[in-house]
Length: 383
Image (cartoon, rainbow, N blue to C red; front, side, top):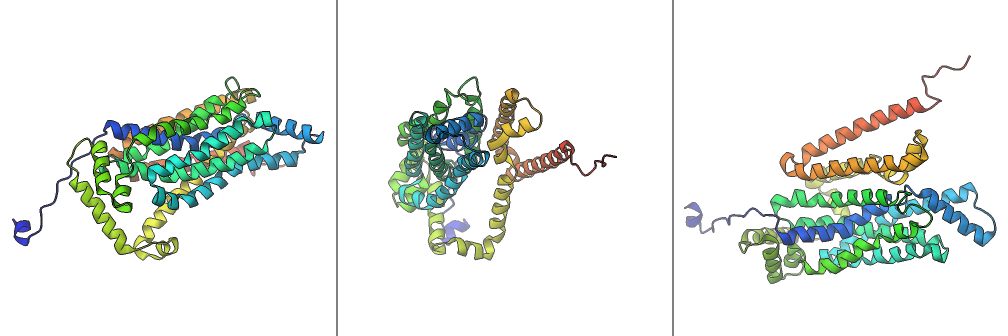
């Protein structure tokens, strides 16, 4: 009664969203063609690194009638590995402009160029006898990963209803881990991690991109982008109707309109302005700490150098590749488990548990490595 007397319309009840087929298939298409790239190329050069180094050396010998020295080989291989995160940095700087001008779905589709072209170049690098194609392609694949790892969570979060955003959002990490795991499987010496199969191993990164190009155009653009950035309410309504499976969408549209009004009131927010805002300081600090914790956990070193680490720890070279696959299995199990539990336990509890386990593992690993070292501080000098 108070709302009627005051002339304020009653609040529109929101309907809890369900995982409709359109939302499910759009999530699979977007995540497989984008997040998969990041995980696959993060791990694909790990196990067969000796095969790649041999190709580098043979190519160099054909050009100069002499083999590389150790320093040059180390430099080239370091470039092969490190060019991927460098490209990721470049891609992450481009994504803001792309998602606003081309849309979330449009950005993911355009980004496939940065996966298909290097896949072709790496696939022909052996025939062309040019290891430079691999190094260059790693940069371009890094750009692809940087764009997709930023644009994909945005796209999935804006497709999903509020009650499913946690689960749908974890699909980015799920497909990254699936990419890592399949790269570990395909990199086995018995499959493609050998002198004959490595060009196919590297070229396979173009397959998910091609599949995304063939499937993602049939799914809707982000309703939020259509309504706020493009001002096209009819397209936003149509997208929501396909994603939600019902026509009762006024509450969700009103939330988007309120968000658009808040953004216009704030105006353009630069990075420097964001850092200076006292009201967002703790949120920004929390994000930085969480992201830094993830990157400094050592997981990327495992993905890049797991085979070398296990060999130096005493695992036979022939068996280290299978130990690497075993770690990938554990990674997949825990990622899927977190995807199932995120809506039940909440983000905070899972983050605390994850970082707690990670910190404990790092402590144990440090102690084990100290005991493994013959120069440990506990050793008494020989008498």
